[in-house]
Length: 169
Image (cartoon, rainbow, N blue to C red):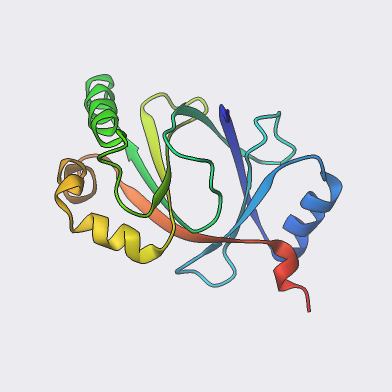
């Protein structure tokens, strides 16, 4: 069970060195789908962070199978305590086996360390097209308010997972 995810950003050589210096950790390397050379390294070991300036997230909820490959969608938002309860209820409804969208491997509800009113929905999909299909489906409707209303300081980013050694020539 993963109860904490740490993240850092950097260049390929820096992230490769972090991996090399910490062979006992489970790292996931992500590449932005929209910004060239925007790399992110996730430490999903749950251990204290080895990063110099980490972003640390507590895992509040997770349905899925810990499949770390595929298309990553990070959705960031700021919510009141009541709005967090509403979001949690919506996610609980979605997270039943018969309602999980096709192609969704994992759904993490994350809370940034020291920011109790912020939430990050991290969804990991088999393919980016699976996410796109879900965005047009009925099961996405309860979540549209967060991205469409402008009231929740919403922003998002997309990444794909790969291994750093795949970049070596």
